[in-house]
Structure formats: C-alpha cells, structure tokens
Length: 365
Image 1 (cartoon, rainbow, N blue to C red):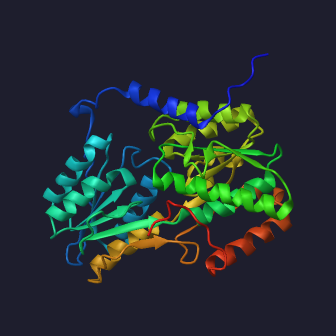
Image 2 (spheres, rainbow, N blue to C red):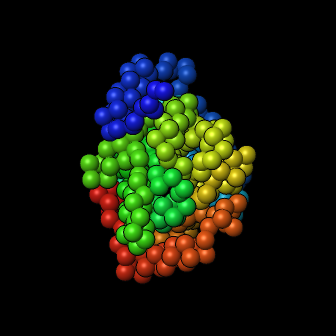
C-alpha cells in the first residue's frame, strides 16, 4: 500500500510556489474591482459616511471580511451613519477601491486585511482629511488620521490548542495557513504553545502537524480563495493521523469543513468568527473557534468618529479586553470533560490577569 505523503515545510513551500505559478498574470481589469457601493440611510449625525474595502476573500467569507461588514452594518443601524462597500477580487484592486471611496466623500475608510497595508498607508498619507482604519495591520507611517485594529489572537489560539490537545484521539492535530503572514502565523504560534502547555501539564506527547513555530514555517496554500487546495491539505493532514484541524485561511477553510464531513471522525477549530454560527451546515464538526471581535472594533471606531472622539492610537484586541477569545463548544460541549473545561478557564484567567504571557514574534504592538 502506498504511504500517505507527509507534509513538511519544504513540501509546503513547494506547494505554495506551484500555486503562485498557476495563478499567472493578474485578472483582467473587467474582472476586478467589484465596486458594490451600497448606500445606507441618512445619518442626521454630521452626515458621517463610513466605507469599507474587503480583501480578495470578499464580504461573504464567513470570516474576517464578513465580521467587519457586520460591524459596519451595526453602525448603520444603531448610529445612523451612511455606509458603502467595495469588494476586492485581487490585491490589484485595493488602491483603486480605496481611491473610489475617497472620491465618494467617505469620512472613514476601513480596510480589511494585512495585505492592504501598503495601499492604505499611502492613501492615509496622501489624504490627511480622511480617516483610515485597517484591520489586521498597523500603518508603517502612522498619522493621526490612521488607526490600526489588530488582535493578539495567539492568546485565544493558545486556549484552543490546549482544548485540541485534550480532545485528540490520535495524539496528532494539524493546521495550515492561507498565506504565511504575521496575522495567520500568530494563530499557529498560539495553537502550538497551547498544545505544548497541555503536554507539560499532562505528560502527554500530542504532536502538531503543519507548523513549526521556531522556524516560522509550515503548510500554506498561497492565497485565501482556493478551497479545493484547503481540502487537499486537510486530507493530507488526516492521512498523517491528525483528527483535529485548524485552518487559518478564511474561505479556504471551507475545504477543511468538506473534508471533515466526508471523513466523519475529524473535528475543526474555525477562526475569526464563531464558525458554528457562520457555517451552520457544518456545525457538528466545529469544536470551537478562535475569534477576533472585528465587528465590535469596527463599530467602536465608527462611533468614535461620529462622537468627535477619534483617536489614532492602535486598538489591540486581547483576552483581557474581550477583543479575542474562543467560542462556546456548542455540539461538543457534552463531550468536553469538566476537568478540561476548568483548566481552560483557569488559563484564560491567567492570561487576562497577565500571569501567563503567550509569546509570538507576530504579536501586534
């Protein structure tokens, strides 16, 4: 019988290179920049207009773009601000979508995603009269009109890693990234450390496949759109023995959900939003989720501008301020031992109180 292929950092890099090569040239301009501008109701509060640009995952990614949109929709409903959206199909769309929103007299432009940092930074410098907020990245040349919305997801992923180590039946769990960038690697770092903590506490040897924290290398798809590739990587991790998978890959994670459903004995830890709620058809396979409260951060940022209290200092979501956390266990709740739940709660308290520091080179400052 042919042995299953073992995923290594080298193999992952090669897979990524092949994917990037297959992508070829940038999409034709007629396929890009889906300027889906959806106007909100009249504000009556200084006519504040808050706008948002998605990354290439789109606003229905059941992950961070959708979470950001939900926050802006809440601001529209509760604060009465006008809103508009520009959905990007590729990285090449970022600058043009931001420019279009400036021309539409947006008072605040919110970009979603680390890959948008350069375009947002340049726009903020060129247009000091407009406020900018960026999810998942800081501004290289920070101005008073630029606010970073970043999240220390290593803290929440640490708790999820501890839970996964306590629930695996094979002694192996897996993870992979959409792209190996700081905002995805930080999840894998925390997840790895949570597993290590469980091993230390219980004298076990649970193994993490797909990520090497020390080398900062692992399995990466190369984008946030290729769900079939996510399924392929998931199947390879399963073949190596992993029975719990953490896909840090936005919509690519849908491939992991499909693989888990086909396999029947694999659980998933979702990211960014509560996957049990956003992926209802797969809820029975989602043990928990590592959540970033992006919607709340977006809402608060819009409210600060509307109330005349804009602050350009970075917002950093943590366990302590409720900016990150793990979702309920939902359908898995009865399966999680009370002792394991208690241990996770204690770790959460220690992190919140600063008694336990989760370290990652990718932690936002």
